Amino acid sequence: MKKTRNPLLEDSLQTYKKHPGTSWVLSLAYGTFAALILLICFWMMGISLLLIPLVILPALFATIVAHFLLEQKQMVTFGAYSSYFFNYFRRKYRSSFRFFSSLLWCLLFGLLASFIFGFISYFIVTNIDKAGFEAAQQTIIEVAQDGSIFINYGSLKDLLGENYYIFSLYTALSFLPPVFVMWFVFFYHISRNSLSIYLRLHIKNADPIYVQALYRYTYMSHKSQMNRDYWYLNWLLYLLMFVGFIAGVFLSSLKTFDVDILIIGGLIGANVLPVFFYPFYFANMESIFKKWKKAFQNSSLIIAQNQLKALQKNIVISEEEKNALEEKLKEMTNKNNEENGGDDSSDQPPQE
Image (cartoon, rainbow, N blue to C red):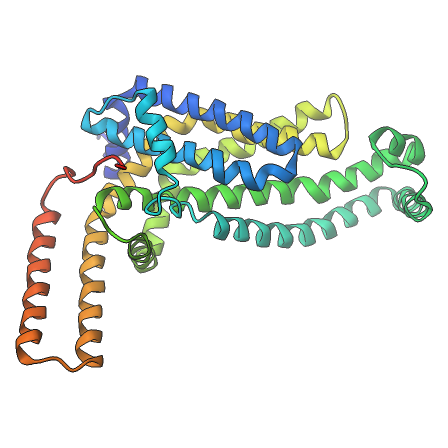
């Protein structure tokens, strides 16, 4: 008996099959561009807080919009892509990814992971060579207190001698897992919040605060189901991210045990390998939105009803005004029912 595919997966595959060539071009172009910018960020961490929100996220936004509009037979040109890139900075779209809240989650999980893996790494190295590790610690403390020697990778190796490798193991186990956790959490929140882009495209002339509230209300109302759909379609992306991180660390370790280089190598791998899943990822996100589009519309009606009830409760209005508000609500209900059975013709590219 032939096994039936999950309808969500089937829809995603059908979306991908409509324009596989263009999907790959968009994905590889974005992936290459983002990897180059991230490489600069990793080497100069101080500018990462500028380049990620001002360059990478607008490019991701432009790629999402361009890919989404392929279904409407809209050609992707350099001019159109550039327009989408700069439209990200419009008030309607610039809060789509919730960059600062995503960064906050990243830092919180990174701090928690640092404590956990700090204890684990200490337990491991002290069971392997406690005397050597403590001697390495003492040497570094003495040098730091002296302040006359600038410690870099080469000088550290000379200072620690035979204890260098046990100390390198400690730093690797202490720093590499938390860095991966931070990137994983940051990417996940940026990715999940990107669903609001499709909602912003669908709702014309809506205040972005309202759209974000609508997205959050719907997400919180269907959190477990939406998360299940997200992970069902995108688990391979995060597996590739993990494998890429491990591969990047391994390849870097063939040349050096400098933890800074290992981190950079791991992050590069964690961003390069998932690029080969991006064409499917963009189709997955579109399918998730299409599945939950009706829920967004229903949530919009619920929010309107709650606002109307609050308005009727908190202000004195005449019977005529009350009837007019109720008639408006009925009109919104009918419109919502019509849209639930309609098409996606209202999804338009961002306009100036």
